[in-house]
Length: 459
Image (cartoon, one colour):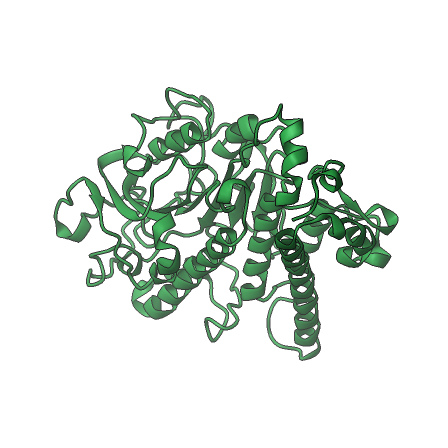
């Protein structure tokens, strides 16, 4: 262990700066404990609480996701708000053991730190397309019909309300990401954004990984020296002798993670060039989906890890966009995800593959977060509330009830997961958002149309 007198001048708030002003924030390192304690009045500072969302567009294929629905008949398109009973009978309200369906199977490795939450509903406000309110109103803070002169029950969303409490000390109060690489804007902003400052004022999603990377690490002025790790290594080497053996290992892992992001961006650029040269019939702007979604997820996790932000949203794709997408390594040809949900009898296998891939991408991020150590023997996942969800309970029926939701993390010790929490019929989705705000230390009596907290996930 290093001596205290070599530690006191080192602060986690300090940046590693390289040539041209490029900078990297540091992850939590145990060698900074003494300095952090001094800055905190002699007390050990608690790790920051984080909030994140992994949003699935166009609903879910219920028979693969929900326990007990594997043999359900495939519905034809039945319009919005079609109500389906769970396994044809009333399911007891309360906590149940986790059942890992084919779609949820990738989450088995983090089973102690997730809970499946079922039975939560939304109310569709007539006046717009059912998809238009899916993502845009998923995190809304107002009840249906509460906003006058608007077809959308939409106001300041949960991420920004949470950031008012836990995001004021970070460079960015929130981070909004979308894995939508289409340049042809065929739908309005309501189909491709889930984060809003207020009614009619969107917090636009960022879609370009390089621009996000530059925003996070401040390299926009260093186009000739894009490799940020090379720029920072000079100062990094001077810092490393002051670190403990554990921190030097953690420090190396951190730089490796940044390197991996850079290599993934290079790989995407190379693949795009090769595809363009091969004259393959596909829109030139499409990015390889596997690489793209994993990269955007890595950017989100890294931003949470180093304290660039404490609140982030990631949309896997936009609602209802019909342009075919190339799902490399998953599907054998381009498909419109939205189009497939309208004919599940013809695309069931492919829909299930996509759903499982999306859940596996989410599970991959959870596993990575659970391997990032923070103060007090906790991990990044322990100090985060990370929710996977969709604005529809079924992509075919367009129902707004019994939404697919998985809550992961520990909320800084406020959550107790590892179960299937089934809520009584008619429980508003807003109950979950109210619960999460309370776990973050943001005291509110109600949220949108909430009726109370969901006690089944509380520690």
